[in-house]
Length: 142
Image (cartoon, rainbow, N blue to C red; front, side, top):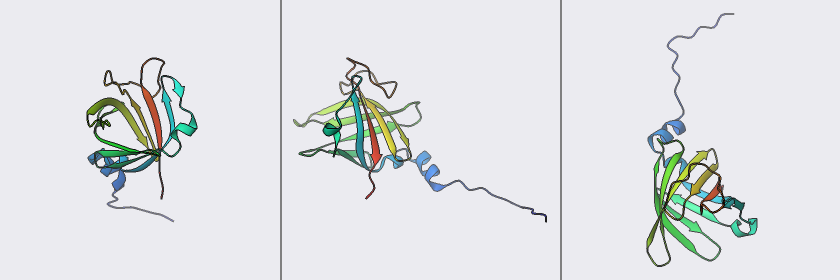
């Protein structure tokens, strides 16, 4: 038996093409916070249970048990690690800027933020007295 192929073409999947064309595409949807670390210490699970983030375009809503906060963000996927700049609206209506790094792999989304607006984190772990916090999200399936 002999098998021959002629004019064989390999087409890449559209998901990979979409992610390259639009770096916001993999971030869209609803994400549950599964772990949070600040200053080198993990937050108690009771503090993060039920926290979700809904991302639509370049806007987000953080939904807590008693309130909703929102803001916007921009990304630079050409950097390693990928960079994110988050504009968080405070309760007083002011905007707070948080430099961050992020990574999306499948249904896992990791972000390390500097809520004080200073230097951008360089890794997804936090150290005491940096003020950084690192969050791991899982995509919520309906």
